[in-house]
Image: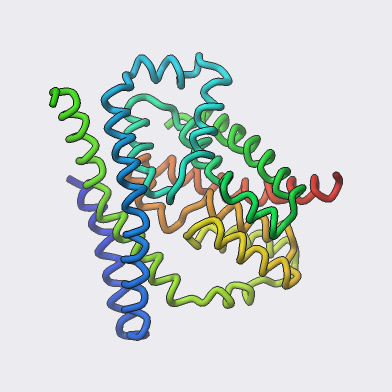
Length: 162
Length: 140
């Protein structure tokens, strides 16, 4: 019950911020709402994909499989899976939280979740754009460093007890 | 439809619906920030001091939300105006790895402790990664 109240509290806080902005800068309200609706339209297909993944995951993946492929005993493979999934995942991170929450409930460790989130900084389709602004050498070094830092962050979270 | 599939759909639907108010809140907050603060205003907060600018860059990246492409374009603008490359890099990394606006959704699904520690660590990592990247690029 508390969790549900908390999720509504945030929305209420945003409505209050809009109300205050409406008094101070009324001209900003309609463009903001329009921008937000356009953003929702863009995000809906991502949510649909994530929802399908969640159902598929719930249906096909058992806790035994999680232990086998993503458990501490699965060695380097689990980092490759987490970071590979992070790099390939598209859409905003907040769309992925329900999926990550479901993974956590199934027994996936915080280390792999942290590595997944950090490795999302690498976007393969966007690398040519980064190379255009900052050069190929910079883009390659950034990609390699971010992969290493994803593992480092994941390993730190594996040591932290929650 | 078999019972297991129905159960999987129901469970996933419930998880999505539980977070719906937070998603809507985040999207509308992003909309407001985007319309209230023009992108040109961001350049003004840098000091041209590499140390402070790295912290400012990471902080700005932590607060803003959007496609990483926008961070590359803004980063390109910052670099063009003489902002230190470590600060620009920290800004672009924090943009994707740290989420102040998304924090309510992250703490609801993964727990407050994890969300807090992950964001703090990612903030520090954005600066550390930026220093490593710029140093390596300068050497090779």
